[in-house]
Amino acid sequence: MSSAVGMMDEAYFVGRREILEWLNGTLSLNLSKIEETASGCVALQLMDACYPGQVSIQKLNWSARNDYEFIQNYKLLQTAFDKFHVDKHIPVDKIVRAKYQDNLEFMQWFKRYVEITGPAPGYDPVAARSKGKGAPGASSGQPAARTTAARRDAAAAAAPAATRKASTTARTTGAAAAKATSTSTELTRAQDEVAELKVAVEVLEKERDFYFEKLRDVEVLLQLREEQGKPVDGMQDIFKILYATTDNCVAVSDEGQVLEGETARAYKEGAAANGEAEEVLLEA
Image 1 (cartoon, rainbow, N blue to C red):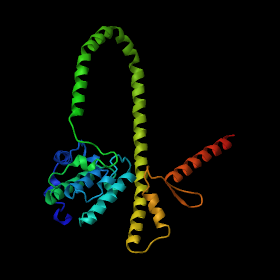
Image 2: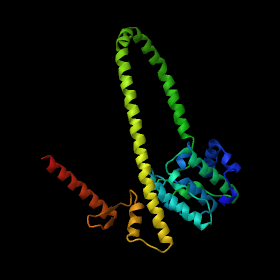
Image 3: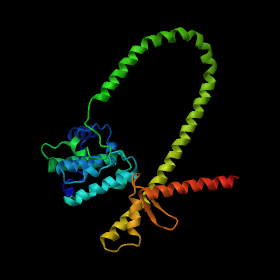
Image 4: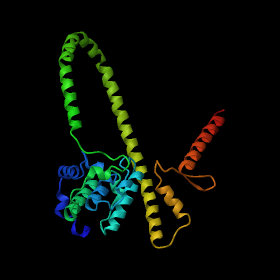
């Protein structure tokens, strides 16, 4: 399929607004940004729209918020691609970062795929995704209604607020002038702090991407070894650690044993408690 949609295909000239309108209309969602498709849930449901009941949409984690949780959803998508012989490469390492251009291009490709394959007649997107974790319901106009009501309330409150402001302006003019210098200094200090925080965030993001790429390389290597029938010692344990989620806790004991579920959670809690006790002893 992907060979029929080259980078110069008209599919890649479809704009953000049209893509969002198409996604919201096709899947009855309420997306406002392309980046919201980064979790992989929207992509797999588009496959489900083409092949209802034949992909594992019930295993989707719609409430996923972290890169490692997104990857689980993309594993389901890759399985669907393999099942229906879709030779499109999924740039998971780029898409999960929720960058606009990468996600836009993936959704542009998907729009063309669905147009060619055709969604199943009578497909009910809300019912189809209802079994998934944290699945959203149908889109509605309620947010807009709440916004309108808020604006109306604000307008109603504006008149008395304006009257109060007029009555106090004369009394506060002198005080405002006296505080001007102090306010300017505080503003400068706040701007400097914001700049420092931005730098710190950029450093953290680079570190996160650096270690994510390493984990991704390890995953690819292990998958290739598995496909080639050349397993690495402890391969399945490594996979358990790589694919662990917040719901499926995994821990490695001091003896090198891989623990799962409640056992792993209890081990981590015990280790944390011991660490706190050691800190107290050191301080003493």
